Image (cartoon, rainbow, N blue to C red; front, side, top):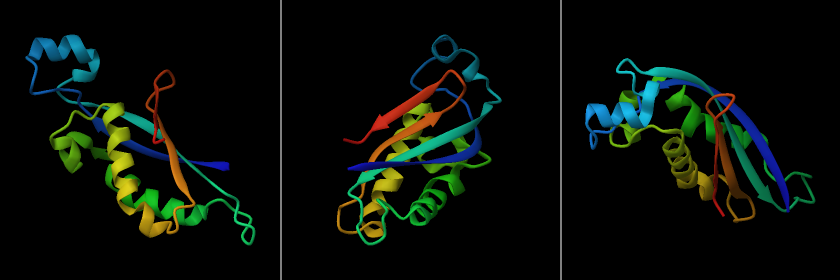
Length: 141
């Protein structure tokens, strides 16, 4: 098996705030990320795909096809958006980086088999860099 990782960028803002908590509990839990006006990040998303090397193409995955999938299912809907209001999943869920990874995984998985038929190409992991100090990873296997 060979792994291929592609890197994508998008800028988005959000507010970490849960209706399940009081204002004070939200401030204590999320700190400055609970700013009522939101705050933004220049996110870096890494999508790692694994699979066998195709002997004809010499590739594990057609990177152009992967790029189109990530652009249409993630970047297009997230880039320059206020996630709490503009991304439907985050109208119900707090847009933490952990939850962003879950949403990205669900969005990619929903189309994966139709874009990459045959089951040879596998979505192995998704990483999200929120800041220089905060990197989150979701492993799908």
